Amino acid sequence: MHYYIITGASRGLGKALAESVLSLPDTKVIGVSRHATIEHERYSHQPLDLSDMLAVQNNLHKVFPQWPDAQSITLINNAAVLGEIGYLGEHQNEHFEFVFDVNIVAPAMLMNTFLSAYSGLSIPRTILNISSGAAQRAVDGWGAYSASKAALDALSRTAQKEQDLRGSGIRIRSLSPGILDTAMQEHIRTADEYSFSEAAKFASFYQKGKLANPVDIVDKIVSWLRETSYENRSVVLRITDL
Image (cartoon, rainbow, N blue to C red; front, side, top):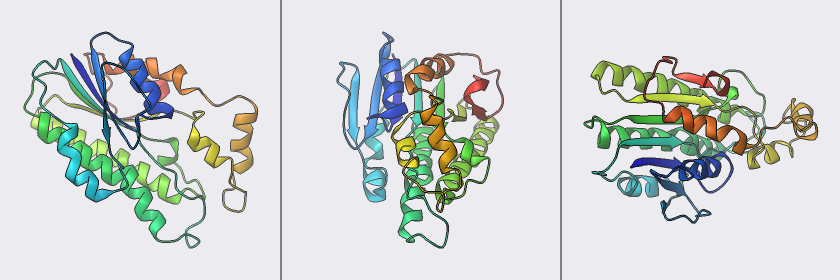
């Protein structure tokens, strides 16, 4: 059996990934999110609010059990928040704690626990972190989001180097999936140009039908995840690299 642990599996890309995985006959999915929106005999839900650090610390052990029948184990850190759109100096300080907890602190803890639980196994093991193009460029109004995704890319590179040095065989990648038609994009379209200079451009992506449907890319991601050869040595990837 191939096991997939997917955060943010209740909607958007996370839900599409979970449903794509479950369409395969030899898989089980553990969805980590506040609410369950998938009903399937091979789907298990672990309720968890990734912005609640105490809850995350107290419940992580439930996410990573030992599976004697596992042929592979994959963690997909998909859950993320954009937070309030606005410039530094114009936010409440709590904004940064919220965004960084969900986007980098919780994924770091999930990665750490995954590696601790499964580093001694010989089966294929993968951590896929869902990043963003905003990690690689300055986007005004998205300071916390961009910085947290850049941190996720850096953590992925470091973790992969460490696993290579340990010889564990674990694959770690950080993937920018492109501009998707999700609830985050709906939130972006509510911004004004005073808080986000690219507001009109992002609104036009939706108006001109340039936003990709998550369903259209997930099969490509899942097919790549199931590959047994790891010839692509770049840790930080774009969807076009798969």
